[in-house]
Image 1: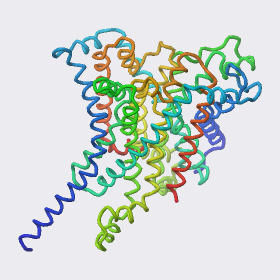
Image 2 (image 1 turned 90 degrees about the vertical axis):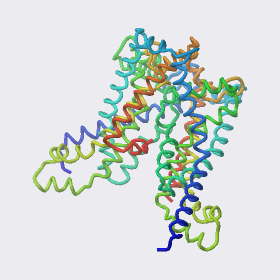
Image 3 (image 1 turned 90 degrees about the horizontal axis):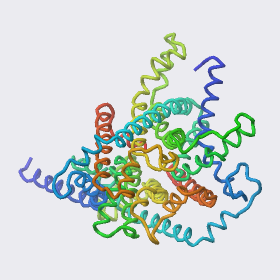
Image 4 (image 1 turned 45 degrees about the horizontal axis):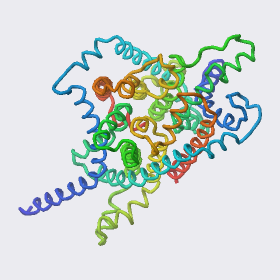
Length: 259
Length: 289
Protein backbone atom coordinates (compact mmCIF):
# COMPACT_ATOMS: atom_id res chain seq x y z
CA UNK A 1 0.00 0.00 0.00
CA UNK A 2 1.16 3.48 -0.68
CA UNK A 3 0.71 6.11 1.95
CA UNK A 4 2.21 9.54 2.27
CA UNK A 5 5.76 9.60 3.61
CA UNK A 6 5.12 11.57 6.83
CA UNK A 7 2.27 9.21 7.76
CA UNK A 8 4.51 6.23 7.30
CA UNK A 9 7.33 7.76 9.33
CA UNK A 10 4.91 8.65 12.14
CA UNK A 11 3.57 5.08 12.07
CA UNK A 12 7.03 3.53 12.28
CA UNK A 13 8.06 5.87 15.12
CA UNK A 14 4.88 5.09 17.05
CA UNK A 15 5.35 1.32 16.67
CA UNK A 16 9.01 1.57 17.68
CA UNK A 17 8.06 3.44 20.85
CA UNK A 18 5.43 0.86 21.78
CA UNK A 19 7.88 -1.99 21.19
CA UNK A 20 10.44 -0.18 23.35
CA UNK A 21 7.83 0.13 26.10
CA UNK A 22 7.29 -3.63 25.86
CA UNK A 23 10.90 -4.70 25.88
CA UNK A 24 12.88 -2.10 27.87
CA UNK A 25 11.67 -3.09 31.35
CA UNK A 26 12.89 -6.61 30.70
CA UNK A 27 16.25 -5.49 29.35
CA UNK A 28 16.89 -3.14 32.26
CA UNK A 29 16.91 -5.80 34.97
CA UNK A 30 20.02 -7.63 33.81
CA UNK A 31 22.41 -4.62 33.98
CA UNK A 32 20.99 -3.69 37.40
CA UNK A 33 21.67 -7.20 38.68
CA UNK A 34 25.38 -6.77 37.87
CA UNK A 35 25.58 -3.43 39.68
CA UNK A 36 27.80 -2.95 42.69
CA UNK A 37 25.51 -0.30 44.20
CA UNK A 38 23.20 -0.93 47.11
CA UNK A 39 20.54 1.24 45.54
CA UNK A 40 19.17 0.88 42.10
CA UNK A 41 20.98 3.23 39.80
CA UNK A 42 21.16 3.14 36.07
CA UNK A 43 23.64 2.81 34.53
CA UNK A 44 25.36 0.90 37.36
CA UNK A 45 28.47 2.65 38.83
CA UNK A 46 30.58 -0.49 38.43
CA UNK A 47 30.04 -4.13 37.68
CA UNK A 48 30.04 -6.89 40.26
CA UNK A 49 28.59 -10.28 41.01
CA UNK A 50 27.69 -9.14 44.51
CA UNK A 51 23.94 -9.78 44.21
CA UNK A 52 24.42 -13.21 42.69
CA UNK A 53 26.72 -14.12 45.59
CA UNK A 54 24.12 -12.78 47.99
CA UNK A 55 21.52 -15.02 46.32
CA UNK A 56 23.63 -18.18 46.25
CA UNK A 57 24.92 -17.63 49.77
CA UNK A 58 21.49 -17.17 51.30
CA UNK A 59 19.98 -20.38 52.72
CA UNK A 60 16.40 -19.12 52.48
CA UNK A 61 16.73 -18.18 48.79
CA UNK A 62 18.38 -21.51 48.04
CA UNK A 63 15.65 -23.46 49.81
CA UNK A 64 13.04 -21.48 47.85
CA UNK A 65 14.87 -22.28 44.61
CA UNK A 66 14.83 -25.99 45.43
CA UNK A 67 11.09 -25.79 46.12
CA UNK A 68 10.43 -23.97 42.83
CA UNK A 69 12.43 -26.45 40.76
CA UNK A 70 10.91 -29.49 42.50
CA UNK A 71 7.40 -28.15 42.01
CA UNK A 72 8.04 -27.27 38.36
CA UNK A 73 9.54 -30.67 37.48
CA UNK A 74 6.84 -32.64 39.31
CA UNK A 75 4.17 -30.47 37.67
CA UNK A 76 5.50 -31.30 34.21
CA UNK A 77 5.88 -34.99 35.08
CA UNK A 78 2.22 -35.19 36.15
CA UNK A 79 0.48 -32.62 33.93
CA UNK A 80 2.06 -33.80 30.65
CA UNK A 81 0.77 -37.43 30.61
CA UNK A 82 -2.61 -36.36 32.01
CA UNK A 83 -2.89 -33.57 29.46
CA UNK A 84 -1.80 -35.73 26.52
CA UNK A 85 -4.34 -38.45 27.43
CA UNK A 86 -7.12 -35.88 27.72
CA UNK A 87 -6.10 -34.10 24.49
CA UNK A 88 -6.07 -37.43 22.65
CA UNK A 89 -9.56 -38.25 23.91
CA UNK A 90 -10.82 -34.78 23.01
CA UNK A 91 -9.57 -34.88 19.44
CA UNK A 92 -10.53 -38.52 18.75
CA UNK A 93 -14.06 -38.35 20.07
CA UNK A 94 -16.93 -36.51 18.44
CA UNK A 95 -19.10 -37.22 21.46
CA UNK A 96 -20.91 -34.10 22.71
CA UNK A 97 -19.89 -34.68 26.32
CA UNK A 98 -16.26 -34.43 25.21
CA UNK A 99 -16.83 -30.83 24.15
CA UNK A 100 -18.11 -30.04 27.62
CA UNK A 101 -15.10 -31.81 29.14
CA UNK A 102 -12.78 -29.86 26.83
CA UNK A 103 -14.24 -26.55 28.03
CA UNK A 104 -14.09 -27.69 31.67
CA UNK A 105 -10.42 -28.55 31.32
CA UNK A 106 -9.70 -24.99 30.16
CA UNK A 107 -11.41 -23.46 33.22
CA UNK A 108 -8.11 -22.50 34.92
CA UNK A 109 -7.59 -19.97 32.11
CA UNK A 110 -11.02 -18.40 32.58
CA UNK A 111 -11.46 -18.15 36.34
CA UNK A 112 -9.64 -15.12 37.78
CA UNK A 113 -6.57 -16.52 39.50
CA UNK A 114 -7.26 -14.73 42.78
CA UNK A 115 -10.58 -16.60 43.09
CA UNK A 116 -8.91 -19.93 42.30
CA UNK A 117 -6.22 -19.16 44.87
CA UNK A 118 -8.61 -18.30 47.68
CA UNK A 119 -10.86 -21.27 46.84
CA UNK A 120 -7.92 -23.68 46.96
CA UNK A 121 -6.80 -22.11 50.22
CA UNK A 122 -10.22 -22.76 51.79
CA UNK A 123 -10.23 -26.40 50.64
CA UNK A 124 -6.61 -26.99 51.67
CA UNK A 125 -7.30 -25.48 55.09
CA UNK A 126 -10.03 -28.12 55.57
CA UNK A 127 -7.95 -31.09 54.42
CA UNK A 128 -4.62 -29.98 55.89
CA UNK A 129 -2.70 -29.34 52.67
CA UNK A 130 -1.71 -25.74 53.44
CA UNK A 131 2.08 -25.24 53.48
CA UNK A 132 2.69 -28.68 51.99
CA UNK A 133 4.63 -29.80 48.92
CA UNK A 134 1.76 -32.03 47.76
CA UNK A 135 -0.66 -29.13 47.83
CA UNK A 136 1.68 -26.88 45.88
CA UNK A 137 2.31 -29.50 43.18
CA UNK A 138 -1.39 -30.39 42.82
CA UNK A 139 -2.38 -26.74 42.38
CA UNK A 140 0.30 -26.24 39.73
CA UNK A 141 -0.72 -29.40 37.87
CA UNK A 142 -4.23 -27.97 37.66
CA UNK A 143 -2.91 -24.61 36.41
CA UNK A 144 -0.54 -26.22 33.89
CA UNK A 145 -2.99 -28.72 32.36
CA UNK A 146 -4.66 -26.23 29.96
CA UNK A 147 -1.28 -25.38 28.40
CA UNK A 148 -0.54 -29.04 27.67
CA UNK A 149 -4.06 -29.66 26.38
CA UNK A 150 -4.14 -26.62 24.07
CA UNK A 151 -0.73 -27.44 22.65
CA UNK A 152 -1.39 -31.16 22.10
CA UNK A 153 -4.93 -30.70 20.73
CA UNK A 154 -3.42 -28.31 18.17
CA UNK A 155 -0.69 -30.87 17.40
CA UNK A 156 -3.25 -33.66 16.91
CA UNK A 157 -5.26 -31.52 14.50
CA UNK A 158 -2.62 -31.93 11.82
CA UNK A 159 -2.25 -35.65 12.55
CA UNK A 160 -4.19 -38.15 10.44
CA UNK A 161 -5.89 -40.70 12.76
CA UNK A 162 -6.06 -43.15 9.85
CA UNK A 163 -2.35 -43.85 10.41
CA UNK A 164 -3.06 -45.20 13.86
CA UNK A 165 -5.93 -47.25 12.43
CA UNK A 166 -3.50 -48.83 9.98
CA UNK A 167 -1.11 -49.74 12.78
CA UNK A 168 -3.98 -51.28 14.73
CA UNK A 169 -5.28 -53.21 11.74
CA UNK A 170 -1.77 -54.64 11.43
CA UNK A 171 -2.12 -56.08 14.90
CA UNK A 172 -0.75 -53.48 17.30
CA UNK A 173 -2.93 -52.74 20.28
CA UNK A 174 -4.11 -49.20 20.80
CA UNK A 175 -1.54 -48.23 23.41
CA UNK A 176 1.38 -49.55 21.35
CA UNK A 177 0.14 -47.94 18.17
CA UNK A 178 -0.18 -44.63 20.02
CA UNK A 179 3.41 -44.78 21.24
CA UNK A 180 4.78 -46.12 17.96
CA UNK A 181 2.84 -44.05 15.43
CA UNK A 182 1.03 -41.09 16.98
CA UNK A 183 3.37 -39.87 19.70
CA UNK A 184 6.47 -39.47 17.50
CA UNK A 185 4.48 -37.21 15.19
CA UNK A 186 3.04 -34.98 17.89
CA UNK A 187 6.22 -34.99 20.00
CA UNK A 188 6.95 -31.32 19.35
CA UNK A 189 3.55 -30.20 20.63
CA UNK A 190 3.89 -32.44 23.70
CA UNK A 191 7.31 -30.97 24.49
CA UNK A 192 6.00 -27.43 23.96
CA UNK A 193 3.00 -28.10 26.23
CA UNK A 194 5.26 -29.53 28.94
CA UNK A 195 7.60 -26.55 28.72
CA UNK A 196 4.72 -24.08 29.03
CA UNK A 197 3.47 -26.02 32.08
CA UNK A 198 6.99 -25.76 33.54
CA UNK A 199 7.17 -21.99 33.00
CA UNK A 200 3.66 -21.62 34.41
CA UNK A 201 4.70 -23.48 37.58
CA UNK A 202 7.97 -21.55 37.84
CA UNK A 203 6.25 -18.16 37.56
CA UNK A 204 3.12 -18.94 39.55
CA UNK A 205 2.81 -16.47 42.42
CA UNK A 206 -0.73 -15.83 43.58
CA UNK A 207 -1.81 -19.35 44.53
CA UNK A 208 1.55 -19.82 46.27
CA UNK A 209 0.97 -16.63 48.29
CA UNK A 210 -2.11 -18.20 49.85
CA UNK A 211 -1.25 -21.88 50.18
CA UNK A 212 2.51 -22.09 50.64
CA UNK A 213 4.39 -21.57 53.85
CA UNK A 214 7.13 -22.78 56.18
CA UNK A 215 9.95 -24.53 54.35
CA UNK A 216 7.83 -25.07 51.23
CA UNK A 217 7.77 -21.51 49.93
CA UNK A 218 8.65 -21.12 46.26
CA UNK A 219 10.93 -18.35 44.95
CA UNK A 220 8.03 -16.21 43.77
CA UNK A 221 6.45 -16.04 47.22
CA UNK A 222 9.72 -14.95 48.83
CA UNK A 223 10.30 -12.42 46.05
CA UNK A 224 6.81 -11.00 46.49
CA UNK A 225 7.26 -10.62 50.24
CA UNK A 226 10.68 -9.02 49.73
CA UNK A 227 9.29 -6.58 47.14
CA UNK A 228 6.58 -5.44 49.52
CA UNK A 229 9.16 -4.42 52.09
CA UNK A 230 12.04 -2.92 50.16
CA UNK A 231 13.76 -3.11 46.82
CA UNK A 232 16.57 -5.57 47.32
CA UNK A 233 18.92 -5.85 44.30
CA UNK A 234 19.22 -9.59 45.04
CA UNK A 235 15.80 -9.80 43.39
CA UNK A 236 17.30 -8.32 40.22
CA UNK A 237 19.78 -11.20 40.14
CA UNK A 238 17.04 -13.79 40.70
CA UNK A 239 14.81 -12.10 38.12
CA UNK A 240 17.60 -12.19 35.56
CA UNK A 241 18.13 -15.91 36.13
CA UNK A 242 14.38 -16.63 35.94
CA UNK A 243 14.00 -14.60 32.75
CA UNK A 244 16.99 -16.34 31.16
CA UNK A 245 15.48 -19.73 32.07
CA UNK A 246 12.07 -18.77 30.61
CA UNK A 247 13.55 -17.48 27.35
CA UNK A 248 15.71 -20.55 26.93
CA UNK A 249 12.72 -22.83 27.46
CA UNK A 250 10.48 -20.84 25.08
CA UNK A 251 13.23 -20.95 22.49
CA UNK A 252 13.42 -24.73 22.78
CA UNK A 253 9.63 -25.03 22.65
CA UNK A 254 9.15 -22.85 19.57
CA UNK A 255 12.06 -24.16 17.51
CA UNK A 256 11.03 -27.76 18.18
CA UNK A 257 7.48 -27.00 17.17
CA UNK A 258 8.59 -25.73 13.78
CA UNK A 259 10.68 -28.73 12.80
CA UNK B 1 -28.51 -54.66 6.17
CA UNK B 2 -28.61 -57.47 8.72
CA UNK B 3 -30.19 -56.89 12.09
CA UNK B 4 -27.08 -57.39 14.19
CA UNK B 5 -24.66 -55.11 12.32
CA UNK B 6 -25.88 -51.77 13.74
CA UNK B 7 -26.02 -53.42 17.15
CA UNK B 8 -22.37 -54.38 17.01
CA UNK B 9 -21.31 -50.99 15.71
CA UNK B 10 -23.37 -49.35 18.46
CA UNK B 11 -21.67 -51.46 21.10
CA UNK B 12 -18.35 -50.71 19.52
CA UNK B 13 -19.15 -47.01 19.63
CA UNK B 14 -20.13 -47.29 23.30
CA UNK B 15 -16.84 -48.96 24.14
CA UNK B 16 -14.93 -46.35 22.19
CA UNK B 17 -16.72 -43.57 24.06
CA UNK B 18 -15.96 -45.13 27.43
CA UNK B 19 -12.29 -45.56 26.54
CA UNK B 20 -12.06 -41.89 25.62
CA UNK B 21 -13.86 -40.90 28.80
CA UNK B 22 -11.41 -42.99 30.83
CA UNK B 23 -8.48 -41.26 29.12
CA UNK B 24 -9.81 -37.80 29.94
CA UNK B 25 -10.83 -38.76 33.46
CA UNK B 26 -7.55 -38.18 35.38
CA UNK B 27 -7.19 -34.65 34.00
CA UNK B 28 -10.87 -33.99 34.59
CA UNK B 29 -10.55 -35.18 38.19
CA UNK B 30 -7.68 -32.74 38.82
CA UNK B 31 -9.74 -29.88 37.40
CA UNK B 32 -12.87 -30.85 39.32
CA UNK B 33 -11.08 -31.26 42.66
CA UNK B 34 -8.73 -28.30 42.38
CA UNK B 35 -10.80 -25.61 40.73
CA UNK B 36 -14.49 -26.57 40.42
CA UNK B 37 -14.77 -27.76 44.02
CA UNK B 38 -12.77 -24.84 45.52
CA UNK B 39 -14.74 -22.22 43.59
CA UNK B 40 -18.01 -23.98 44.48
CA UNK B 41 -16.94 -24.02 48.12
CA UNK B 42 -16.16 -20.33 47.93
CA UNK B 43 -19.62 -19.61 46.52
CA UNK B 44 -21.24 -21.75 49.23
CA UNK B 45 -19.29 -20.01 51.96
CA UNK B 46 -20.50 -16.62 50.75
CA UNK B 47 -24.13 -17.53 51.54
CA UNK B 48 -23.76 -20.03 54.39
CA UNK B 49 -22.66 -19.19 57.88
CA UNK B 50 -24.54 -21.29 60.42
CA UNK B 51 -27.52 -21.03 58.08
CA UNK B 52 -28.33 -19.11 54.95
CA UNK B 53 -27.31 -15.50 55.03
CA UNK B 54 -27.08 -12.70 52.53
CA UNK B 55 -25.27 -10.52 55.04
CA UNK B 56 -22.00 -10.68 53.04
CA UNK B 57 -23.69 -9.47 49.88
CA UNK B 58 -25.71 -6.82 51.71
CA UNK B 59 -22.44 -5.51 53.10
CA UNK B 60 -20.52 -5.36 49.87
CA UNK B 61 -23.39 -3.61 48.14
CA UNK B 62 -23.91 -1.07 50.91
CA UNK B 63 -20.47 -0.30 52.29
CA UNK B 64 -18.57 2.49 50.63
CA UNK B 65 -15.16 0.83 50.52
CA UNK B 66 -16.49 -2.05 48.44
CA UNK B 67 -18.31 0.23 46.00
CA UNK B 68 -15.28 2.39 45.51
CA UNK B 69 -13.10 -0.62 44.88
CA UNK B 70 -15.50 -2.09 42.31
CA UNK B 71 -15.75 1.28 40.55
CA UNK B 72 -11.97 1.75 40.58
CA UNK B 73 -11.38 -1.76 39.24
CA UNK B 74 -13.85 -1.13 36.44
CA UNK B 75 -12.23 2.21 35.56
CA UNK B 76 -8.69 0.84 35.58
CA UNK B 77 -9.71 -2.21 33.52
CA UNK B 78 -11.47 0.00 30.99
CA UNK B 79 -8.52 2.39 30.77
CA UNK B 80 -6.06 -0.48 30.35
CA UNK B 81 -8.24 -2.09 27.66
CA UNK B 82 -8.59 1.12 25.63
CA UNK B 83 -4.89 1.93 25.94
CA UNK B 84 -3.99 -1.64 24.95
CA UNK B 85 -6.17 -1.30 21.85
CA UNK B 86 -4.64 2.07 21.02
CA UNK B 87 -1.06 0.75 21.34
CA UNK B 88 -1.72 -2.81 20.23
CA UNK B 89 -3.66 -2.26 17.03
CA UNK B 90 -0.84 -0.46 15.18
CA UNK B 91 1.66 -3.09 16.36
CA UNK B 92 -0.51 -5.97 15.15
CA UNK B 93 -1.13 -4.10 11.90
CA UNK B 94 2.59 -3.50 11.43
CA UNK B 95 3.31 -7.19 12.06
CA UNK B 96 0.65 -8.23 9.55
CA UNK B 97 1.92 -5.99 6.72
CA UNK B 98 5.65 -6.16 7.48
CA UNK B 99 7.84 -8.20 5.13
CA UNK B 100 8.81 -11.68 6.35
CA UNK B 101 11.60 -11.47 8.86
CA UNK B 102 10.42 -8.14 10.20
CA UNK B 103 7.09 -9.55 11.27
CA UNK B 104 8.95 -12.23 13.24
CA UNK B 105 11.05 -9.55 14.96
CA UNK B 106 7.91 -7.60 15.92
CA UNK B 107 6.13 -10.70 17.19
CA UNK B 108 9.19 -11.82 19.15
CA UNK B 109 9.32 -8.43 20.88
CA UNK B 110 5.65 -8.88 21.82
CA UNK B 111 5.94 -12.49 22.95
CA UNK B 112 9.16 -12.22 25.00
CA UNK B 113 7.59 -10.06 27.74
CA UNK B 114 4.62 -12.44 27.63
CA UNK B 115 6.86 -15.27 28.82
CA UNK B 116 8.59 -13.24 31.50
CA UNK B 117 7.30 -13.65 35.04
CA UNK B 118 4.68 -11.06 35.98
CA UNK B 119 6.54 -10.60 39.24
CA UNK B 120 9.79 -9.83 37.42
CA UNK B 121 8.04 -7.23 35.27
CA UNK B 122 6.38 -5.64 38.30
CA UNK B 123 9.85 -5.41 39.84
CA UNK B 124 11.26 -3.82 36.71
CA UNK B 125 8.54 -1.17 36.74
CA UNK B 126 9.22 -0.45 40.41
CA UNK B 127 12.88 0.07 39.57
CA UNK B 128 11.98 2.31 36.64
CA UNK B 129 9.28 4.42 38.22
CA UNK B 130 10.17 4.93 41.87
CA UNK B 131 11.34 8.29 43.27
CA UNK B 132 14.99 7.36 42.91
CA UNK B 133 14.23 5.24 39.88
CA UNK B 134 15.71 5.28 36.41
CA UNK B 135 13.12 7.59 34.82
CA UNK B 136 13.25 10.20 37.57
CA UNK B 137 17.06 10.17 37.54
CA UNK B 138 17.07 10.62 33.79
CA UNK B 139 14.59 13.50 33.84
CA UNK B 140 16.61 15.25 36.56
CA UNK B 141 19.87 14.84 34.71
CA UNK B 142 18.22 16.33 31.65
CA UNK B 143 17.12 19.24 33.84
CA UNK B 144 13.47 18.72 33.00
CA UNK B 145 12.34 18.39 36.61
CA UNK B 146 13.63 19.52 40.02
CA UNK B 147 11.57 17.28 42.22
CA UNK B 148 11.09 13.58 41.45
CA UNK B 149 7.68 12.80 39.98
CA UNK B 150 5.31 10.46 41.82
CA UNK B 151 5.15 7.78 39.14
CA UNK B 152 4.51 4.76 41.30
CA UNK B 153 2.61 3.71 44.44
CA UNK B 154 -0.48 5.21 42.83
CA UNK B 155 -3.00 4.49 40.10
CA UNK B 156 -0.62 5.73 37.38
CA UNK B 157 2.02 3.14 38.22
CA UNK B 158 -0.61 0.43 38.42
CA UNK B 159 -1.95 1.27 34.96
CA UNK B 160 1.50 1.50 33.34
CA UNK B 161 2.58 -1.90 34.65
CA UNK B 162 -0.78 -3.63 34.12
CA UNK B 163 -0.92 -2.34 30.54
CA UNK B 164 2.60 -3.62 29.96
CA UNK B 165 1.64 -7.09 31.15
CA UNK B 166 -1.66 -7.28 29.25
CA UNK B 167 -0.61 -5.68 25.94
CA UNK B 168 0.49 -9.02 24.37
CA UNK B 169 -3.01 -10.40 25.07
CA UNK B 170 -4.33 -7.64 22.79
CA UNK B 171 -1.71 -7.90 20.05
CA UNK B 172 -1.80 -11.69 19.56
CA UNK B 173 -5.55 -12.12 18.82
CA UNK B 174 -5.46 -8.97 16.67
CA UNK B 175 -2.53 -10.32 14.67
CA UNK B 176 -4.19 -13.74 14.29
CA UNK B 177 -7.29 -12.08 12.81
CA UNK B 178 -5.43 -9.61 10.59
CA UNK B 179 -3.24 -12.32 9.16
CA UNK B 180 -6.32 -14.10 7.83
CA UNK B 181 -7.64 -11.05 5.96
CA UNK B 182 -7.19 -11.88 2.26
CA UNK B 183 -4.80 -9.43 0.61
CA UNK B 184 -6.79 -9.59 -2.64
CA UNK B 185 -9.63 -7.79 -0.89
CA UNK B 186 -7.35 -4.84 -0.20
CA UNK B 187 -6.10 -4.88 -3.76
CA UNK B 188 -9.68 -5.09 -4.98
CA UNK B 189 -10.46 -1.99 -2.93
CA UNK B 190 -7.48 -0.21 -4.43
CA UNK B 191 -8.34 -1.29 -7.98
CA UNK B 192 -11.82 0.13 -7.51
CA UNK B 193 -10.22 3.48 -6.87
CA UNK B 194 -10.17 3.62 -3.06
CA UNK B 195 -7.07 5.22 -1.57
CA UNK B 196 -5.08 3.36 1.10
CA UNK B 197 -6.83 5.28 3.89
CA UNK B 198 -10.29 4.50 2.55
CA UNK B 199 -9.35 0.85 1.93
CA UNK B 200 -8.19 0.62 5.53
CA UNK B 201 -11.36 2.13 6.97
CA UNK B 202 -13.85 0.38 4.73
CA UNK B 203 -12.20 -3.02 4.24
CA UNK B 204 -9.38 -3.81 6.66
CA UNK B 205 -10.79 -2.34 9.88
CA UNK B 206 -14.23 -4.03 9.66
CA UNK B 207 -12.61 -7.38 8.91
CA UNK B 208 -10.32 -7.04 11.93
CA UNK B 209 -13.19 -6.41 14.36
CA UNK B 210 -13.45 -10.04 15.61
CA UNK B 211 -9.82 -9.72 16.72
CA UNK B 212 -10.58 -6.41 18.40
CA UNK B 213 -13.43 -8.03 20.32
CA UNK B 214 -11.31 -11.06 21.31
CA UNK B 215 -8.39 -8.89 22.44
CA UNK B 216 -10.53 -6.41 24.37
CA UNK B 217 -12.41 -9.21 26.13
CA UNK B 218 -9.23 -10.97 27.17
CA UNK B 219 -7.51 -7.80 28.41
CA UNK B 220 -10.57 -6.47 30.23
CA UNK B 221 -11.34 -9.76 31.97
CA UNK B 222 -7.72 -10.31 33.00
CA UNK B 223 -7.48 -6.72 34.27
CA UNK B 224 -10.61 -7.16 36.40
CA UNK B 225 -8.92 -9.88 38.45
CA UNK B 226 -5.38 -8.49 38.42
CA UNK B 227 -3.54 -8.75 41.70
CA UNK B 228 0.25 -8.47 41.59
CA UNK B 229 0.66 -5.06 39.95
CA UNK B 230 -1.95 -3.15 42.02
CA UNK B 231 -0.59 -4.77 45.18
CA UNK B 232 3.06 -3.92 44.47
CA UNK B 233 2.70 -0.69 42.49
CA UNK B 234 -0.56 0.70 43.83
CA UNK B 235 0.93 1.89 47.10
CA UNK B 236 -1.98 0.63 49.20
CA UNK B 237 -4.33 3.28 47.84
CA UNK B 238 -5.27 1.59 44.60
CA UNK B 239 -7.42 -1.13 46.14
CA UNK B 240 -8.66 -3.31 43.30
CA UNK B 241 -11.25 -6.06 43.78
CA UNK B 242 -8.65 -8.83 43.95
CA UNK B 243 -7.00 -6.99 46.85
CA UNK B 244 -10.34 -6.79 48.67
CA UNK B 245 -10.49 -10.57 48.42
CA UNK B 246 -6.98 -11.14 49.70
CA UNK B 247 -7.23 -8.57 52.50
CA UNK B 248 -10.47 -10.06 53.75
CA UNK B 249 -8.74 -13.43 53.93
CA UNK B 250 -5.32 -12.43 55.21
CA UNK B 251 -5.86 -9.38 57.37
CA UNK B 252 -9.41 -9.60 58.66
CA UNK B 253 -10.00 -13.35 58.50
CA UNK B 254 -13.37 -12.61 56.88
CA UNK B 255 -13.76 -15.62 54.64
CA UNK B 256 -17.43 -14.98 53.98
CA UNK B 257 -16.85 -11.42 52.81
CA UNK B 258 -13.86 -12.48 50.68
CA UNK B 259 -16.00 -15.20 49.10
CA UNK B 260 -18.85 -12.82 48.31
CA UNK B 261 -16.48 -10.38 46.58
CA UNK B 262 -14.98 -13.30 44.66
CA UNK B 263 -18.42 -14.49 43.54
CA UNK B 264 -19.32 -11.00 42.28
CA UNK B 265 -16.04 -10.83 40.34
CA UNK B 266 -16.58 -14.31 38.91
CA UNK B 267 -20.17 -13.45 37.92
CA UNK B 268 -18.92 -10.35 36.10
CA UNK B 269 -16.30 -12.37 34.21
CA UNK B 270 -18.82 -15.12 33.34
CA UNK B 271 -21.34 -12.53 32.09
CA UNK B 272 -18.71 -10.92 29.85
CA UNK B 273 -17.60 -14.25 28.39
CA UNK B 274 -21.23 -15.25 27.84
CA UNK B 275 -22.06 -11.99 26.07
CA UNK B 276 -18.96 -12.22 23.88
CA UNK B 277 -19.58 -15.89 23.01
CA UNK B 278 -22.71 -14.81 21.17
CA UNK B 279 -20.51 -12.97 18.67
CA UNK B 280 -17.37 -15.07 18.41
CA UNK B 281 -16.62 -18.66 19.55
CA UNK B 282 -15.09 -18.67 23.00
CA UNK B 283 -12.28 -21.08 22.19
CA UNK B 284 -11.03 -18.52 19.69
CA UNK B 285 -10.73 -15.98 22.48
CA UNK B 286 -9.04 -18.45 24.82
CA UNK B 287 -6.88 -20.06 22.18
CA UNK B 288 -4.71 -16.96 22.22
CA UNK B 289 -3.54 -17.49 25.76
